[in-house]
Length: 233
Image (cartoon, rainbow, N blue to C red; front, side, top):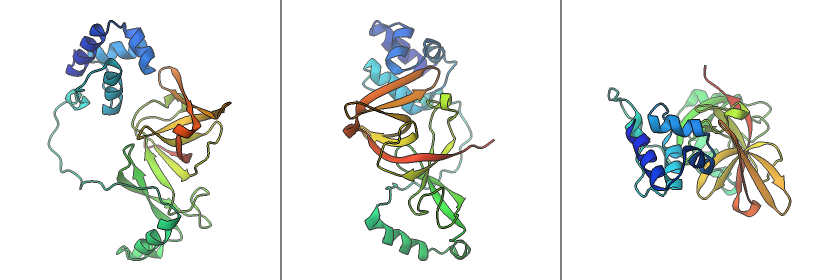
């Protein structure tokens, strides 16, 4: 077993849960829990933290313990926090772009745009040069779109996998049946949304099994709609 697997198994047995019962609580398959406990499966920190939280573990073990030792590499500079642009920030963003030292990029400003890549915790981790067509990027204002890097395989049933980039155009409205970037309880995730009666929203995921979480619409902050998938081969 792995150290993380040992921790999960010990906590599960203490809670008197079977692999199947734990998987149901976490929205995962029984086989997935078994593979994780045996060390055959490595998960992201976010996934591990969620499982351990369900089990009531106070000091979760980082999945970094599951990664084989690798040669030391030069770390990137500390990423800066990314805030979704709003109307009052538009002029500041425009001014900053005009003062950019990248003269060649400024010259091509009407053709391509350096679009930020955002992690689930709201940090800019990269940029992607993206075509601007008729002053828009996939129908959105170039200064307001972003890419979201998918952290796990919770959307694999919708053909979206860990590491994929989703181009997001800002909107605050739920679009029925669309993959949308939302924020709930301080966490940013992409889910397929469906409108329900009673001002409720269903957030769908599809890893090994289909799962759905229903919440009042007021508790789900919609940040944008995913309009394009970018995948590296």
